[in-house]
Length: 193
Image 1 (spheres, helix red, strand yellow):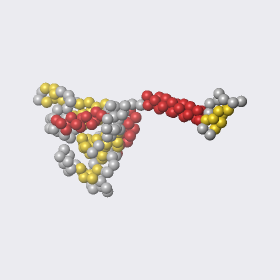
Image 2 (cartoon, helix red, strand yellow):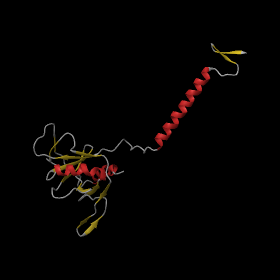
Image 3 (cartoon, rainbow, N blue to C red):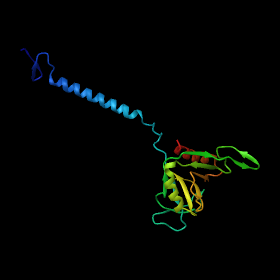
Image 4 (cartoon, helix red, strand yellow):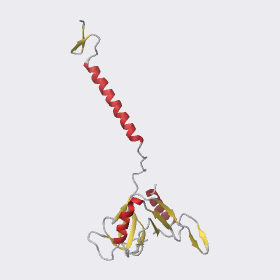
């Protein structure tokens, strides 16, 4: 039998060297990895520019000073009270958000919310209702600060008599400032996308 040389290894004539199989195996493995990666990424949603939107956070407001709490005193919410460092409830997604048209001087004013009364309705997802119901019972008759990220956007009071609804209507804090109203509305809309 004739023998050839491939580097320092000898092999039978016509049979490929061992290094040939190793290279082929690496290429085949890489091809399979790329195929699996492509299939896995095919079902992924497009990422939100700048990362995930900040959640809608609910803070129960207290008139009494809280340990590690902070005092909320902003232009829109002067001397509101104390809130805990972490929210009492956080919702990462909303079902939808809508601006509320309202009557002003006998005529209906359009949507999105106007400077005089920027009112919005947020609709909650079914899977968030148990946590929201529990929170509404704990927050009954108390002021609740609504924030998105580090921006306070509204204050509500939950009624102890009503069963929590899948929606919440409130007035944005940025009254009279069209740019801020639109910014706060846009923050809420991002949570419903």
